[in-house]
Length: 419
Image (cartoon, rainbow, N blue to C red; front, side, top):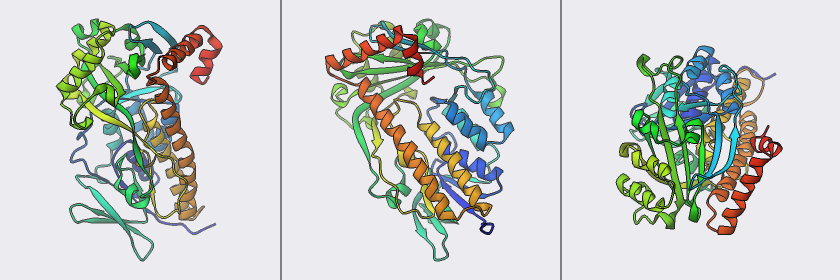
């Protein structure tokens, strides 16, 4: 048995994974500080829906105090009833009914907005999280500690530094300069609108029931989902109810969208006009989703993915979530994988604190596991992307035929759902 090893953990990034880890470390009595470049908790957050799956739910339940997990559950939207695949004329390809789990079941889906989840994860961390702190680099100290340096000239010293600073992580670029993110050639435009009475009337029923994926011509693809709350169960911020809304994303090959400027600098009105132009022969109700979007909620971005790498020589600086295994959004598992990272890293750090493992071997075990399942998720996401964005008529026809075949056979449906 090793001696008890006091730790101080510095986390860069107050996103889903970083805050989940901070909550777990605080509950375990391990000193932790979090530094976030955003000036406030709501900077840059669009409030779009995350789907916390069974794996992510288990990680949250493991890391959060019981009362805080209960608050997270109360803030979640209604679970999806189905997943539906359609073509652009709204002809059905595949419909998957989802099992409704008990409200307090760990294995159920928890749809939740990013802003609502961040509010929950920040609770009780006022003295731990500092906003407006951009980390620019780290330095090893002579006594085995590590210093995080910030843009304002200040620094923070700890025994472990965790880069949870997102897909453009500066810590990753210094720690692993060979770890790259690349463009996939796909550009996405997304938006949302509030479901008031008039807007609700024109939303297709599959979208009201759950995630709906639309395979269009020329490699165009659309995702849409209504986010609905049980008015008798759910209370949002300040005792009020969260608004019901529909979120959608339209994506296509860069040459199809044809933006002259880089995607993230394209104006929202221009982006919407180009999407509607490409949807000229789509079902009018699908076009209506784009027409109703509040321009203030829209964003346009190039879809990127990380390139898998092998384990590296472990030191007391490590990474979590998108900072290493950033993936495309086409399986909806990025946040869940970050939560799994937080749970795994917390377990390793607790074992170090208790003297059950030395620090570097424990971090190496975390990294090896995280690299394995994290980059498998990256590969799975890319595989789905390839299926959805095929330009070839034959390839698209094969995908549609496969979906229709699965739809007719219950055994294949169960396999498709992983049951």
